[in-house]
Image (cartoon, rainbow, N blue to C red; front, top):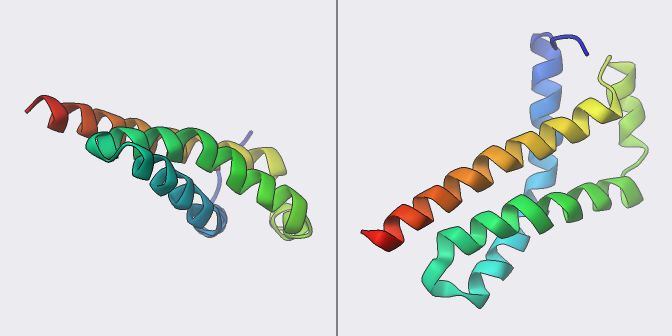
Length: 104
């Protein structure tokens, strides 16, 4: 895998932003179940179910978009890895913030 250029980074950001709606929705639904641990539950939902559901949605209904990114030099694996890693970082940060806030 090569380091993406400036234009490719913009395209990765566009792809990631297109997956955020489902990730946030899953996080909110899980957080609504346990409101006392809102950030922790939101982080877990965002990190796990949000990532899976948003990528599954892309795979089923927006599969033709992968050709656009491929023609710009970005593989499907790079798109998925970017989404997973970004959600992992954000989810872990939210879990840490929620755990810290709970103990304060």
